[in-house]
Image (cartoon, rainbow, N blue to C red; front, side, top):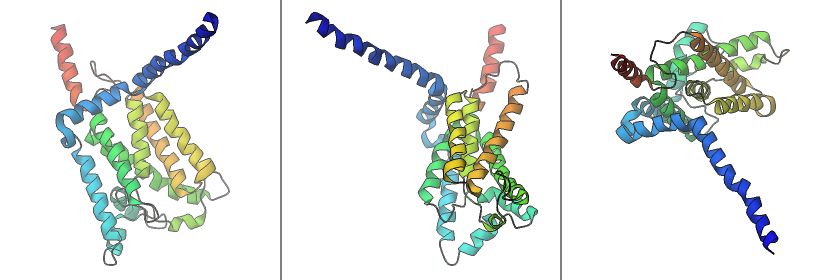
Length: 259
């Protein structure tokens, strides 16, 4: 009886031991990132993400206006991008196109993406980097559409000619690019790989269209940026993954310690 009673206890040990292992893995993956976000929100609350809240508000306004008979044409004129347009016009509209929700998708999805991913990025990498990476990812998608149509459907990376008439708007490419950049910045390698794999599976199995392939283009552009920054020499005392607003503080602290 005593041996029978010992078996459940022996079998339960790995289950109890697995919890600390998972906790340590989660802390290693997301610990620094979550601490940065939590401390910023605890100190400043919504004042920590003014750019993100502005983006959410702008998206709501554009969504409302484009769904009005009097406003649809105006939104298309300032924020709609199509591959059959002149390149200079597409480049002019690309920044605002990020905040124009796709008409065939629920707006709450775009708002949730902007609020969560833009908010984390604004806290973790700063507003200037947020804007730069978001624009780079969106621009990569815009340029890929033209290149893919030029290649044609004969190649897996090409697009059919009909895609040049597709209205190409929304924050998804910027969101994917920012997610990869923040994961690289904070060394969340598993999450970064999961985002990349999810986008590849999306193209291969779910959405083999312009939007899906633009996500891959956005990821590739941001990965190139991350590779360049990885090889670029960093100033002494600047720790990768530290919030931009604290890097100068870190340098001053190091100088004070040496003095």
